[in-house]
Image (tube, rainbow, N blue to C red; front, top):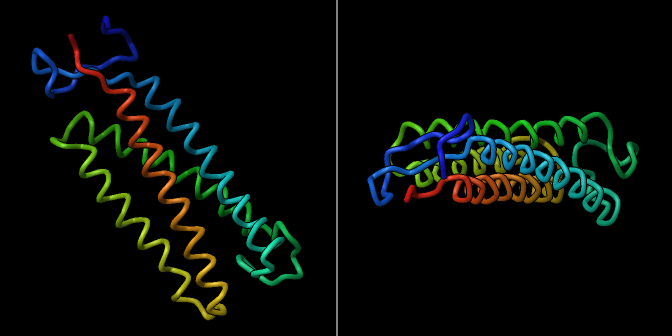
Length: 157
């Protein structure tokens, strides 16, 4: 694959000791991950509030979609996916074993965000539901972004 504006050589384990990163593919995949993450947040709120009647993100009087907190959660999920893409891009161009470091960082950040509902005075049911939703969003961001990186990074032949 010839090097162009969207391909960058990385130190690595290709036949000649180099790998190539297709930055366009990495960032379009990151944008797709952001969309998926926002949709997971939205669908999660609809299922938790509308189907299971668990008042996540505020009292039930706000209906199935909740209030502005739902929009904030969706935007936060999308932003987190874009930040994860930026972090992975930085790690890919500067760090040995970048996907390993990325996995640890995303896992620890996901745990921190997932347990945060337990620091509130919400009911245990709401805390558990919020924890599960946050963990699912983090899992999606971590796996999808790592998968995108694997597709965007190829050994140079």
